[in-house]
Length: 290
Ligand SMILES: CC(C)(COP(=O)(O)OP(=O)(O)OC[C@H]1O[C@@H](n2cnc3c(N)ncnc32)[C@H](O)[C@@H]1OP(=O)(O)O)[C@@H](O)C(=O)NCCC(=O)NCCS
Image (cartoon, rainbow, N blue to C red; front, side, top):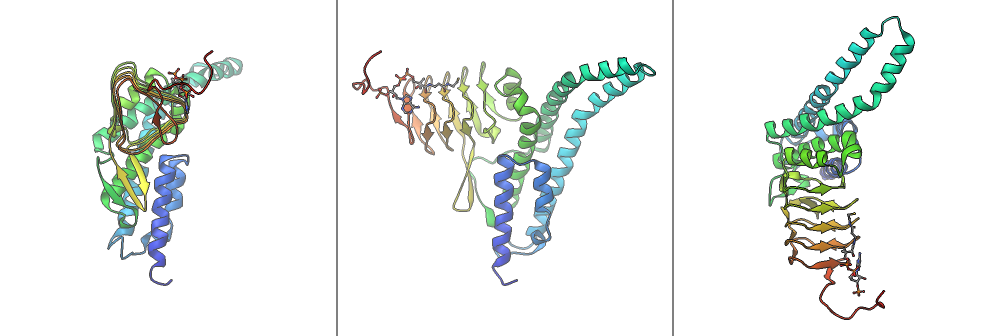
């Protein structure tokens, strides 16, 4: 393999981890896919030991997620064993009991998973570093530590997010996992990550399918910054809020808007569009009044 090819392959592998961890793929699949022999190869950009660093990060991420999932599953399984014992020699009663137990069991598992995952990331200090620039091809410890936090977030998203997003329980989980959220905050989107870099005031509402993250990837580098939303800020359905954005109290962002990185939005104002512009300036309306 000619020199340089390995660099490229490592970069592609890490890009793949980063994107899939923060989006759709299941963490276990990520870990399986990235455990290919190519990551053991050395790269001049990644520096010596890159392969071992990646293996360590994958191994510890896998171990912690297996333990977290086991902690969330065990009480449910114990309940099912108790049900099985209580219905010995009564097949119909057993079938009824197990059927009734399925939905509550899943809810209990989801709640336990949120608690166990948040506790594990806090205990281990896994979080997104603020104001960092982490080149993908260096495969440094900060990048790999951040990937582990994204994996932990993603596992909860996959197993509990669809059931509970938008509810006060989801808000409580986000707080436990590192977000600084005020009272009556509702987050109805799973495209939210880097929780420890998010600061929302009381009464913030995040609409469905909104993308808010404390990270972005530009020109091969993961960049991070805090996102701060004041009290009673509304982010309309399907909007994208880039890193470093700050919105004053009562600011409204219309549906399907894009707020570029580090933009400061004024309190009480309404913004819309891609990129956003202020739309509440009192200028004459282009449409007839209702
Ligand atoms: C932000 C919002 C609340 C503003 O509502 P409003 O104060 O009544 O303002 P209007 O609807 O009158 O719109 C004001 C201007 O912005 C424009 N505008 C509104 N939404 C827009 C959008 N998504 N993209 C581009 N322009 C938009 C309007 O066309 C109007 O322009 P005009 O003055 O030239 O006619 C509303 O536009 C919106 O996006 N609601 C979605 C709420 C949502 O997604 N909630 C999620 C939780 S369910």
